[in-house]
Structure formats: structure tokens, C-alpha cells
Amino acid sequence: MAGNLQFDLVSPERRLASVPATEVQIPGAEGDMTAMEGHSPTITTLRPGILRAVTADGVKSYVVTGGFADISPSGVTVLAERAIPTEEASSTILDEILAEARSLADAAAPEDKAQAEKTVSDVVALRDAVLKH
Amino acid sequence: MPSLKDLKNRINSVKNTRKITKAMQMVAAAKLRRAQEAAEAGRPYAERMNAVMTSLAAGVAGSEGAPRLLAGSGKDQTHLLVVMTAERGLCGGFNSSIAKLARTHAQELTAQGKTVKILTVGKKGREQLKRDWAHAFVGHIDLSDVKRVGYANAADIARQATAYFDNGEADVVTVFFSRFQSVISQIPTAQQIIPAKFEAEAGAASSLYDYEPSEETILADLLPRNIATQIFTALLENGASEQGARMSAMDNATRNAGDMINKLTIQFNRSRQAAITKELIEIISGAEAL
Image (tube, rainbow over all chains, first blue to last red; front, side):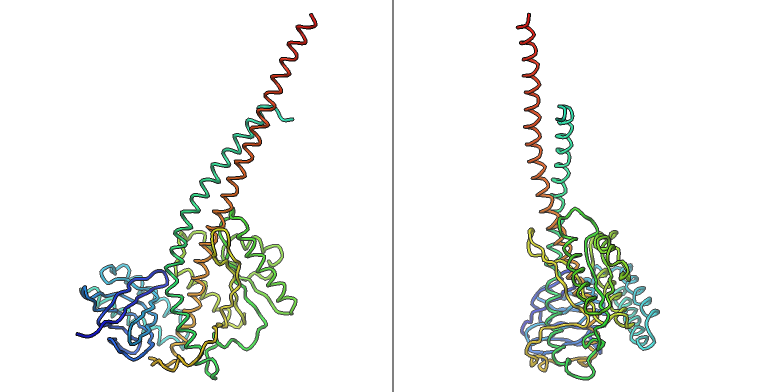
């Protein structure tokens, strides 16, 4: 049995979770990663995706739209710009997020275009993944 | 000397005023609790963000490739002042003290030969600054339709402020708001957000971390977010301060109305007694004359 690490998920408006977890799966900007106890200290930015934490009472998953994660050997703190428990993420909310990303991509300057379009495709993938369940 | 009827009317009107101020005080108390909770809830995010930014900034600050939001535009000619006040009045000196701080700040900058631009958030501050600084206004953000200030509002303000900086229309951005200390004390504060300022702590901590993607990319991604977070914190503090100030102002008003009612009632009773005595004297002296 792997040891526990402290998992905190905070958004600017409230603290969503603060529980011990055995592993946390993070949608990093350059690929998914799983943090367990003793992970080397890392800071990574997030892409829109699903964040999963394996805790004593089962797996908790959240839809996050961006932000960053601060991983240390004893804990993970995720600072998400927007985070919603997956069960609460309805198609209306997801469509709203998608529309927002699209309008940002349309308005983006040429040098940021690629980045913004990647965000849109991430959101589309996220939407499909959530709605399949 | 006002007539008895006038006094009676006066007392009634002050009583009605007292009812209103009392109700406003209670509403403010309820709103204050909610605002304080919101400010409390936003704190962990802001603290973590600040801690990470400090360690990141310490690592990058000296280098050539430091992002502009951190390093600044290399000048400090044009200052953008973001003045955040309430949408409503009747909250004591809350709006005036923020406006006053902004005004002194603007005067100092002008005296140094700098250009001042003002972006107002909240109607009341705009009204107060209009007289002297209307020429410096560059925009206004109206939050009167917003029931509960959310992160999206802060992000919107941040986007506008950053746009001025990016277009070279402002070199330094400072926000003005009131920090919530307690119900009776709110401290008007000026906080510089662009270029970002961090207390330089031991920079050694930054080297312990792995960064994914690179340190610079993360920093470039986080700086705009950090600005939005700081503005959001300021908005929340401001909200709590406003309700606190309104609560104590309305408490005072209620008490003053009570005092006034007591004074008027005494006056009313005295004049009634005087009228009675006068009538008696008239009757008695009339009877004696017979």
C-alpha cells in the first residue's frame, strides 16, 4: 500500500477539496502525470482536462479548465482557474466553457493562435470524455 | 418656536429614518458575513499563488528573458490607477477615503511630471474623482448589475488593465482598494500590480523544483493569472470593507436618530406643558378679573 499525500484543490472562489489521497492524476500541459507519495517537487501548468484523486473513499474526479499544480513529496496542491466535480459538469456548463475557449481563440493574436486552438481541442476532448460517462 | 403639530411630524419622520437605517444596518451585517466568507474562501488560492510566484520570480528576475509583466516596460512615465469603490453610497467614509488616496497619489505623480490615467471600478469613486480628474479617465467598469463578484469579473478587469500595459499606454498599474481590518477599521491601500512586485525571499527555493514546461513558460502563463488573482482579492476585500463601513455608519445613524427623537420628545412635552400652563393662566386671570 502506497503512502498518502495531502491533496488540495483550490479555485479562486473556494477550496474544493482537502483530503489525503494515495495518487493524483493531473492533466499537465505536456501530458498527463500521476503524483504519488515521494514525487520530486514539480510545478506544472494544466490543460483543460479531468483531474482524478484516489482517496480512501474512492476516486474523486474534477473537470479543470487550467491553472497549475504544485507537487511536493508530501502533497499536491492544484490551483485551478475553474474546477467542477465531474458529476456536476453538465453539457451546458461544458458548452459554455467551449464557447469561451473558441471566442478567445478567435480573438487571439497570431503568435498565440496555436496555443488557443490547442486549448479548444483540449476542451472538445474533455467534453467528449465527460459526456461519455 | 415650532408648533406642536410640527414637532409631532418631525418626531415621526425621524422615527421612520431610524427604521430605515436600522434595517440597512442589519442587511449590511448579513452581507458582511457573506463577504467575509468569500474573502476567507479566496485566501488559500491567493496565498499559494503568491508563494509559487515569489519563488518563480526570484529565479527569473535577474535574467534577460524575464517577461515584461515582471520586468516592466523599462519606463515609469505613464501610470494607470485602477480605483475600486462601491456602487452605492451610505457607507460612511468608505468611498471618500479610497478616492482621497487615489487623488493624493495622482497629484504626487503629476507633480513629478508623470502622466496619470484613471480606470474606475464602481460608480461612487468615479463621481468623486470626476471634478478634478475627469480628463484622466480612460474607462469605467460597471459592477452594479453584478450580485456577487466572481473571478470572471476580476479576470475581465485584469484583461483591460493588462491591455493598456501591452499597448504601451501605461507603464505602471496600481490598484486602489480598501483592506478589511475590522468592522470599524478599513484601510485604503494602493497596490502596484504591473510590473509585478514580490518580496524577494531567499531565491534558493526555486532551484529545488522541476518545471514542466520550462520555468519561463510557466511564469509567462502565471503572471496574467496572478494579476487577476490580486484584483480578485482586492475586490473581495473591498466588498467586505464596504459592508463593514456601511454597518458602522448605519449603526451610528440609528443611534443619532434615537438621540434626536429623545431631544425632540422632550421639546414636544415642554411646549405642550407650556401651552397648558398658558391656558390655565388665561382662565385664572380671567376669573380673577371678574
